[in-house]
Length: 333
Image (cartoon, rainbow, N blue to C red; front, side):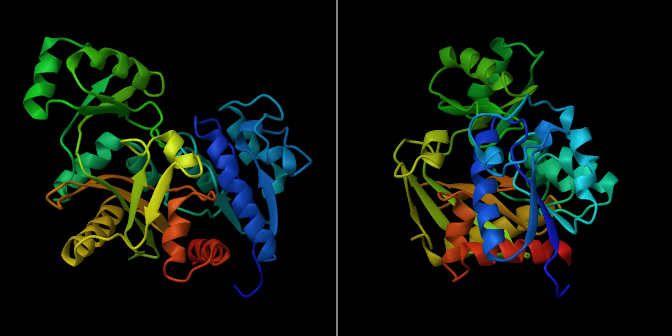
């Protein structure tokens, strides 16, 4: 396709990551304007009541009432007529889990990122880890518990026997460390589970891996340089992710060559094991013995000023604008 395709940029959504999606969306929108794309912006959470002013899409305050039901009405809008590609700047549940992807498939529209099944598998941390284990991709030990399950002595004994304390408790299908707690003893488990269940019907109880925060982007089935995150807190939490100055980043990461290569290999294996396409970011913990543990795959990683994929792309000479161009072209192939 030699001409510039017409793009619909989807931002916002209804997940707890709505605000971050707006930040990603604004950066992507500005890049597409520089690239001379014909772009319209839509927020599926607004349904048929889309703002006329571009600025209203990116404001912290919502323009009108938002709901999941509005997604169906939004995808049915005539605004999608003539659109060549939908750029998904959505994050978290309802945007990254195959839901919006399914609606776009039904509408016959191409979109950025992974397809329906890969998106759903990557968002479901329990299913991802089952696949990682089956494919011999090293991952932290874990237990999954449904919301209607009970915290009893049997579960506590399982935690102690499997990995002990500290352990990580988080929602099974959220991103950006939303609802995540590090439990140092059994007295903290109940409140941690209750917090996780505020965001999901299933919680993941996971072995805590002491060590370093590592991530790798995959773009067009090739890995970008390995990046190490050095958060001001003990863990790369929501504040450290999205507050300027709360984390330092080293890319390429200063780790032994064999470990570096192993992490890149594991990232590509995880990406392909889930059936991902286009681009994604694969997160790891690297323990003190230089053993990497694959945590999860993010199929629609952040594109804000502090986001990791743009930092990794920049390390190999790919500017933010060029990265957006590559993602669009990949998705149109």
